[in-house]
View 1 (cartoon, helix red, strand yellow):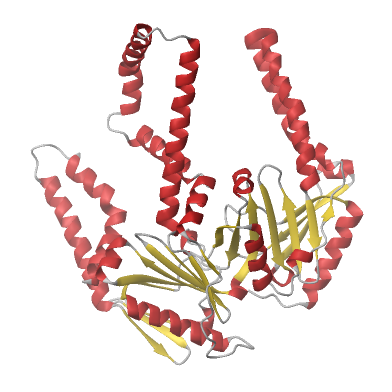
View 2: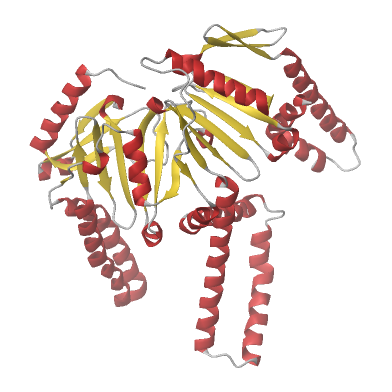
Amino acid sequence: MSWLFVLAQQLKSFVLPIIALLIFGRRGDSTYELWGLVGVGALVLVSLWQYFTYRYGVIDDALVVRSGRLERSLRVIPFARIHNVALQQTLLHRLFGVAEVRLESAGGQKPEAEMRVLKLDDALALEALIRRRGRAAEPGAEAGEPQAPPLLALPPGELVRLGLISNRGMVVVAAAAAAMTQFGPGDALENYLERQAEQDLRLAAGWADNHHLGPAEYAVGAIALLLALLVLVRLLSVALSLLQFYGFTLSEQGRRLTVERGLLARWRTSASRRRIQAWTLREGLLHRLFRRRSLDVDTAVSENGQQQRALRELAPVATPATCDALIDHLLPKAGWTSLSWQPVPGVAWWRLFLPGLPVTLVLAAIAYWRFGPWGLLVLLWLPWAAFKARQRARRIGYAVSDELVAVREGWWSRHWRFAEIDKLQALRLVRTPLDRHFGTAMLKLDTAGAGAMAPPLRIRFLPEDDARALYERLARALARRPLRW
């Protein structure tokens, strides 16, 4: 019955046109319903055809995938080329005891191979085979390495903290509001604001007058409503964290890392440690309140918009000591906890303050024109912006060792971004007009597989001589070291 899963995957792409054809067709005309059924029937035939023509097997040190009858395709994928193995189990997969497997390589536009449905035992066996054969192809690899205890396992209590720290609930609420605005039936939100909102406000005002509520009661009610909404959003974030990360386990076997997570839908993804290109350690205001951090990595996998399936979150939430221990374990030669951090010159705070200055002045002029002298209150933002820029400048720093280059930035929300020198693909020395005025420069460092949400790996506001000396040092190191990815 695996063709049913292929059919379900294809229906996701055609469900909206088919629904539109069935619902918005001319009433009383069965032709549209007939064409809708023809479309579903065609998808069923395509799914059955794919099921009967798809085969895979193993020859020597490669995986062979064959598909098609009229237009045949035969792909031979060396095990050493497979960088990431991702197993997905939706709730339907789990009910049938099957899984979807994706095999990805570095920098490809699509997966090397995609098995829509395999028995779970076969999927796990294929993952173990790829791990064993791929490790055998790596220089210095040892065969038969035992399964080590998990590097990190998150209990439900940690997931509750993650939900309280994260903002997933607000993202879902914002997306739902946008969807209602764009696709709501008959512009329901706009109709409510035009017709019903005024009437509801009058009813609420009448109820308040009958109960003799004053300004203080109004303020308390508004604050209570706001707090209730915030609590509901945080509870939604906790629920989403439990659904996404329940049973989170980071394990290591040989040189390969594996992450397994999910409550209803289960995800299992693995990648070789040497495929990790860069690291990001994050700490927001709520992180510090709960004494937690998060650790993410960038891996060299296919660039097909499926980053949620890649190995990315090594520690969604963990104590600072746990994060440091993970980094020291996975990068034993880097000396993460003993890095010597270098600050940037104090003039850097001006560079952080200047971009917002023209915007604030323009807003103050508009507010003065619209509201008179009261509009100049907008200028009170400038002292706060200057204070914030000073605090951010104090936190900016960089560290360079024989194995690692690292950057730290941020004040309210802080991050540490670092990569092994052997993983750097390009160096750029950049000087903007402000850099030339202040006698500074910026050093940009590029790695493979950088995530869209990852902060850039760059060293800003360096004196020009220091930036050029650091550039030459790193360039010499890259010239004599092979790129490892």
